[in-house]
Amino acid sequence: MSKKEQSDRVRNCLKLLGKEGLPRHIAIIMDGNGRWAQQRKKPRVFGHRAGVESVRELVRASGEMGIEVLTLFAFSSENWRRPEKEVSLLMELFLMALEKEVRKLNTNNVQLRIIGDVADFPEKIRIRIAEAESLTLNNTGLVLNIAANYGGKWDICQAVRQLATRVKQGELEPDEITEEKIAERLKLHDLPEPDLFIRTGGEQRISNFLVWQLAYTELFFTPVLWPDFNRDEFEKALISFSHRQRRFGQTGKQVEQRRNA
Image 1 (cartoon, rainbow, N blue to C red):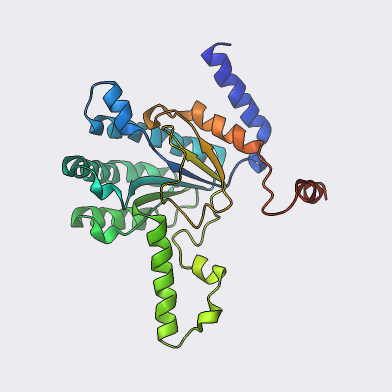
Image 2 (cartoon, helix red, strand yellow):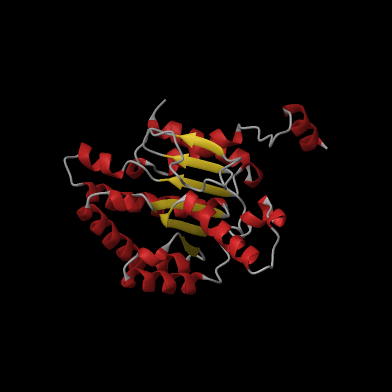
């Protein structure tokens, strides 16, 4: 089977799924930019720039398919440990993306949110983040979350600190702290939890990404490096998701009975 035939087959399968067979929320770790560049004898930042095109393609595809939420892990709280030059170049790329891409997102009715501890970013980036979020705030299409200086453990800690403050002020009793109250204070609290998690680049771990929110998410790992992760690869992940039975603690029989009711 030729590459075109394979691609057509995947697209045809996707059409058969319908909107009900698609995840509402997809979370992605975009891994492999540096290795992609090294394979081509280029600096690592070359791979990061190439990865921006994959982001564009996935945002377009998600919007066209009617997916509600796309969350991309762009820069973790641990990434500050990378070489200083690479971090500096990543900051420049982030700023450039905010300046160049936001108007296109707004034109396409995409709501952009940046989740993470943005206080650590340079002032220029913080200003651009505020402007981008304000510009796209009322858009009703795809919600695009960019996790920047984000860590899943940090997310839980900041939520617990809010609750601890309420306890200290006498507004809340310790035994009133529930999973629901913690979840209400996490980033993305007002959005459905991820149905599908994708990690490119061959690694098979979640790397402190949405630790709480991924508790019942379906996981999909691929060896494809992020700059090569195109629409065809994305659709393969969606096909894989459609074959999963999501039981949430129930038996398979219970799930089938509920589906057929």
